[in-house]
Length: 437
Image (cartoon, rainbow, N blue to C red):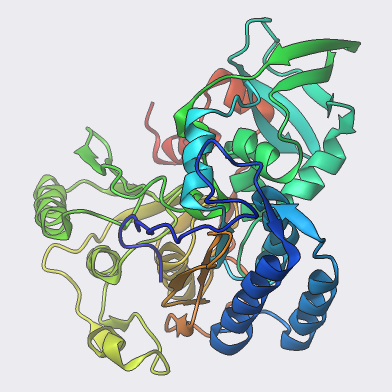
């Protein structure tokens, strides 16, 4: 269903071997009995309360058995987190996450020095797209290894800890590369200086980089989902086309969005603007109402949004959605990518099902079915925070295979060269189609 607003989780009391863990004591170690108690709580929430839409229950049970055997006599919070998190990732649910404690994440914001290069992943290779170090690393250089760990191993380790729905793996990469610094710290290596082997213009060389302090990099797989919440939307009309950029449906003021959307589509109708671009890239989802409102402006007849087998409280959206008064009737182009998830995936599945507009970009991570109605729990001793889905939701679409995203009509990929040059081939392809500069 998506994330409606940023959740603020209260930290549980944390009980290490000696005293309480604070942000400055992240290396405190927990005795086995405390860890086993947290593990039993963790297991109970997953086995008895999780939705298990795409996960194999027997496989998860076996994985939990094996995980319990690996609990050591003492473990730090980070060690315990690294042990448990792959179980959550194997739930194959993009709304299920495990996060470090609030005190640990606070320490990440205040004390950790992060890998200073922004990256993108292409063909299991790691490329630099921005350098925040003092060494003037060439953007476009390929990272071969970090601290003697080869890049393929790093990519595999991080991506295996990321959450997404069903068989999708594109969001694993999408999230891993955009939040590489914190994911590297959490799942690979907590070093704060980095010996990096680089390949640049067929020249292989090694450089040591100091980590950078930046509280905005203190992310976990769970908090990534909240990054775009409350991001501003943009609605504008040019000479030859209208352009709506909607980075999230997790909005602080849905009524204002609805008012502005009505004015926007009314003006489009009055100006007889023939082309509309709706950019949904990076939109992880949000609440139902703004998505259905947008949908009502894109349809040419009443259509259902949710299927009948959804939870009862969605009854008003199981009925046919009426076409809005100023619904668009020209050429629609929708921009999409791997960040399109949850409610955005539902919207894309309906547009695809009913052949509404042309979808440009790459396959979304969200499709026509997912699990959410998520609950948040804090493990009593370590303070690790678990979020897991408890119910199943589905758009009124049957043709798209479950556990897969929505495929675009026109596939347009972003290359490393595009990122470096700030080129937008997806938008450019649409502008070329409608004959606009």
